Image 1 (cartoon, helix red, strand yellow):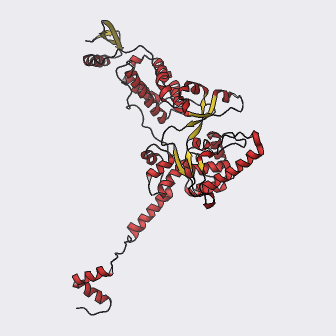
Image 2 (image 1 turned 90 degrees about the vertical axis):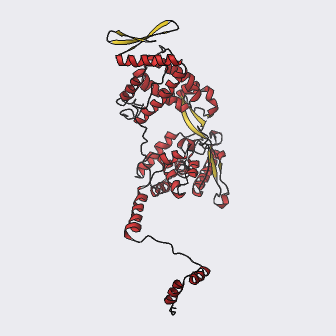
Image 3 (image 1 turned 60 degrees about the horizontal axis):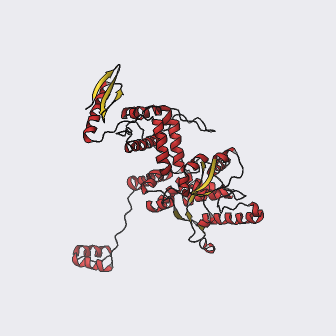
Length: 450
């Protein structure tokens, strides 16, 4: 049995485990009584775990080492470690794990909503922490404290959804199809043009585009307008930190290739540019290539072959579709910057390069009349719901057309009805069975009625 004892302005819950007296201290008597009831209930069921004196930051370091290095991808590892270092440890890292309850965690998430986001080098002031980041911190800590329960550090997971905002996806601005076609017609840089086509026509992500190899493209019947041309999406280019690369060496099977560094700059020493496998089976996919896109890729291939012949050994051939003039890879952020300059130079509506993929999925949903499974196959989304929730933008022009059609068909005119078709045999049978119909037809055609 447990008991409660006042200690100045606080209250301690005292109990024995294996004959050794232990206590936990709370700020209010109500909290102490609630904990006393919980301890006695868990002792009765045989599920009571003595709280560990470990600090939150020390537990999270162990959690990352034991769980994160085995379960997380390189990008997930980097993101989660950043969240812990920037937003968890500074606020609750020095608290004892055993002192973290549901109320304390709810207060923590309420506090997060007023915290300044960490500014990244070279970026503008980000303002407050985004709801999206708070949502991700909630998922991370929920999983971490579940492991703390499994490892017998605590008896109950204190993380709930009560104080955490819902994850809201920011509506992405996309071009209308006519604007995208205009942009494609204006683009003179063959690399950027190919990237735009691959994003719009093949629904590819920028990392998938920069990581695409010629060996995974089949041009089909070239003489017959590239009939049956297709490509296989099998990897993506990503820059990862040297620290993360070393930490996750056991996941080296995810790394298909490490590109050699052209120079020993500070950036190159601290990071690695890698071609890595895609994270899900759904992401690895085959996409059929429209004729126009295939012709652009064919032109790019001829240009690269000429460069290889001209430069000889100076051309570093990694078999990349999107490559620098010396054959080396082009990173996604370089394409992003080039795309932004192209928009400004041609006075086009400002959008992000990734929005082309959103446009692609929207158009495909429309022209396929909502064949979500087919569109899901092109985009590489894990579920059909992810397609409809994330990518099915409705263009304003189409909504306006729908309103105009409704006005015409419902309010302003007759709804078109398809005429009933009847065969001669059916007409004869109808007249024999119904004299009134026969007499009516005779009157219409000038005959005498019976």
